[in-house]
Length: 132
Image 1 (cartoon, helix red, strand yellow):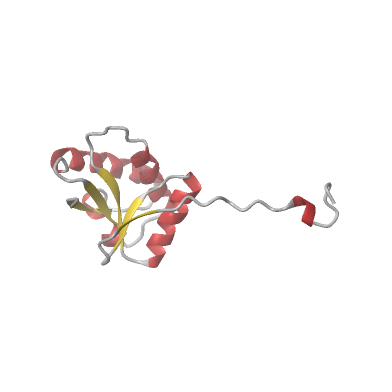
Image 2 (cartoon, one colour):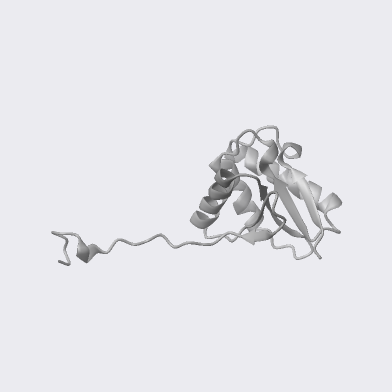
C-alpha cells in the first residue's frame, strides 16, 4: 500500500494565482518533499485550501513537476475536491501533453489525467476549400 503525504497548498504559497507564485510554490514543495517525503510513495498537493487556483499557477506547477527526473523522490500529484478543479487540472495537463496523478477528494483512488488530442478539422468538408 502506498503511503500518502498531503501538502496543503497554503503551506506552499499564500496566493495561488500567478506563474511566478507557481514557481515559488514548486520550490517550497520540493523542500517539503526532500525533508519529510522520503518515506512517502506519493505526495499530493491539496488545492482545497485555496480560494482560487489560476490556470497559469497550475500550469507552472505541473510543468515543473513533470521535469523532475530524480528517481529517489516520490510521485507528486494533486488532490482536488471539486469538478471545476478536476476539469482545470485535466485541461492544463492535456494541453501540455502531461499525465498527472491526482485524487478527487473524498475518493481515495489515485487517477491519472488523460492526454487528449485536439480534433483536427477536415479541410475537404468545408465548401470552397482548396481540397473540395
